Image 1 (cartoon, helix red, strand yellow):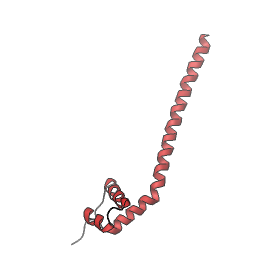
Image 2 (tube, rainbow, N blue to C red):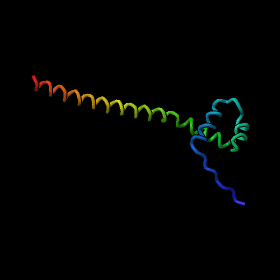
Image 3 (cartoon, one colour):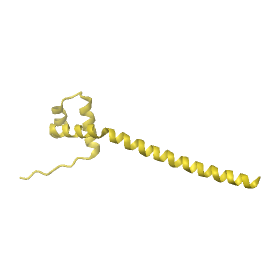
Image 4 (cartoon, rainbow, N blue to C red):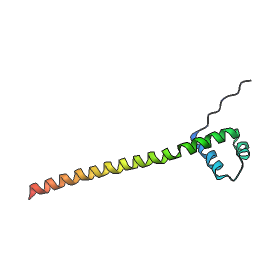
Amino acid sequence: MKRIRRNHEATFKAKVVLEALKENRTLAELASEYKIHPNQITKWKQQFQDNVESIFKENTDKDQEEIIARLYEEIGRLKVEIDYLKKRL
């Protein structure tokens, strides 16, 4: 009988990895609780640790881009107001 390959969602993987990082329980205990192989937990944990820096870097870049866009909008609005007031005087 052929085994069906299981695909786990990102939320499930994150939950398992966070439990593994807490180190309150062994990998074997976590594996039996979540019904996955201990090696799979180790792989997910390694992937998380390798990519954690890029997660925070991307969020910072996006936040900065949003701030810059809002500031340019404000500058444009203020320039229009200044030009209008100069014409009025």
